[in-house]
Length: 213
Length: 424
Image (cartoon, rainbow over all chains, first blue to last red; front, side, top):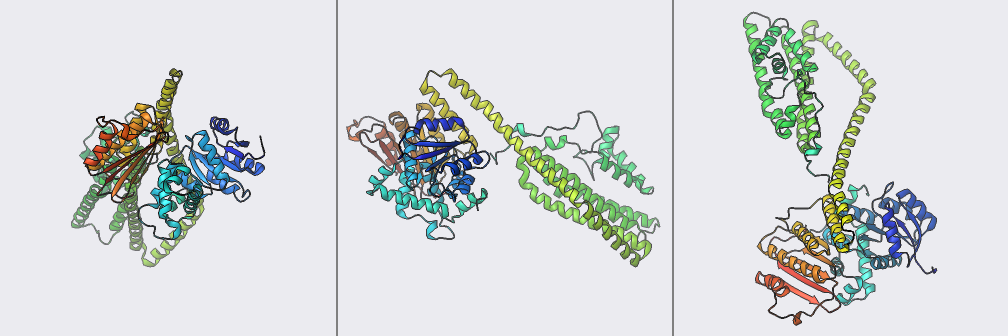
């Protein structure tokens, strides 16, 4: 184990999932802690101050969104990546709006997960095809009542989101649009910021349904 | 899960014993069903019992007192609520029928008054009219109590009936207010009649003070009771939902686990079973969005599920927006299905399907990470992609494009103009 390895904490209430993830990525990152519920997660994260936290959305005690909002201020250098089986929009909105840098579903392969962790650790955003589709769904259609910059996607951001929804990797999206991977990452981060801060009424509705506002 | 219509299992089982017991039936009642209930119990014709009540009433008001006592003591019969549609029963009961009945009772009462007046009884000056007002008010309030009880039964029997409850509650509140007002006015009338206006006012003030004082004392207790009851009902509904989930897990997941154990030596079959179960459970948990026969998104989801089943592949489906299925969309769906089959067979086991209902067109992208192929190298007489996808789309005004490079997977892009297309 070298010091350059990323320090990762896995939070999931299913032991099987934790050991599965450990088995898949354990060789390439330094797993410094595990937690099975929200309360334990907060303790472990504050004690170990990891680079990346892999976080399940639904947890006994306190859910993923609550864990992030509790810890985020005290461990500003830690990034959160949501890892969930749930497709429900309110789960996605909840965890992303509370500060997760990405959202991937549990059917992701080991190498893909590793890439996502690396990307999140570098401060970039990670979108699964499903999250990209969700963003398109939310930001499409009628313009928001309060049509500020935050409530719209630029044409470029829309293109990037469409390619990710179609299953393109960042690299593939970059070559399809004749852009650099770095530019794609910038666009995705911008979309993430809009998703976290936008006032669009769909987002507000889902967020208020989960008492996030 | 929240809006799922309840099935047979969630019906509340009646706790009323089957032994014959005096009860107030819901059908064939005029005021509260007391007379009919008694008649059924005593095996007498209803009119006889009703006549007895009327005669007893005329003989010094005993009938009214008896009727009221029976109303309080006898329960409503439950069976009628279970068998009839609760929404119908409530709506009909609370608007037309009950108003008609009330009107007929009022008319009968007025007739009786006129008769008494004709017989020389001093109706207008005495306490009779206010007393009748008060009794009428009490009947209104008591009837509402019955209706509330029925609404509660039907609300717990079928959770769907909640929507109608709002307006019914509004009507109910007005009935209670009117009833109480009638009672107060009636009693005041008696007081004014007996003791004069000044004394009546004093009595009213005393009564208000007294009622206020009592209310102040018992309020916390009643409020706590009410809160406890609401909490109990919430927990009951939650436990019902949990029971639903448990039953489903029992049926389907355990079944699949058994099958997986039996096929443990066949990895492909195990993967297929697990994936099918995941899909079923997912669509069950995150409620399906539409009817697969009518809407594009639901149909695409169910097609994808079938293709996954048939070819033991994993299709990641992302859909943005939705649209009703018309002739062109049906063609697009058929072509999409072919594309998904192609990806499932040759795409190395996983593929991404993305569909977007935009303004003016519907686009579908099916992308796999298989070995890829050179489209021009496929003989033109071979059906498959060329005919079933490209030809089909172009004949119906759409377009199809196949992008494939050896070693870099394949993407099939379909686009169909739509008239009604709009992002959801």
